[in-house]
Length: 188
Image (cartoon, rainbow, N blue to C red):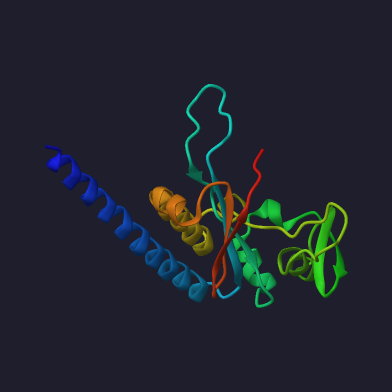
C-alpha cells in the first residue's frame, strides 16, 4: 500500500549515509590540502549550533565561519602578508610556559606580531589574555589565506546538514593536521 513512500524513505536514508561518508572524506581532504598549503596554521576551528532563541524567528542550525590559529612555523612576514592592517597594531605580550599571551598596547614589532599570533594560551592562566584567532574578518581581503579560508567557509556552509549529522549541534569543531575533535559549545 505504501510501497512508493517506503522506497522514497530508503532512497533518502541511502543518500544521507552517502553524504555523511563522502562529506567527512571531502572535509578531511580539503583540510589536508589547506594544511599542506599553509603549514603555518596549527588549527582550524568553528562552532555550529541552532540558537536557543531567535526573537520569534525559527531557530535554524548553522555553521559559523572558521578561525585559524598559527603554529611555531609562522613568520612575521607571513602574518604581515595575510593579516588586515588593524590586526598589526596594539599588543603587549607576556611569555608564560613558552607561549605568548597579549594585552592591548601599541604598534607591533615583528617579534610582538609573532608572539601575539603564534601558540596557545597556557592552561590555568588567569586574566583577559587571549591568543588571536583569525577569521576572514581578521585577514587581508584578497590574500591567499583569506581566499582559502573564505572558500573553506563556503564549503562548510554547503555541508551544514552533513556537519550537523557528523558532529552534532552546540559544538566547537577543532581540526588539526591529524584529527578532528569536538567539544560542547555554550553559545548563550
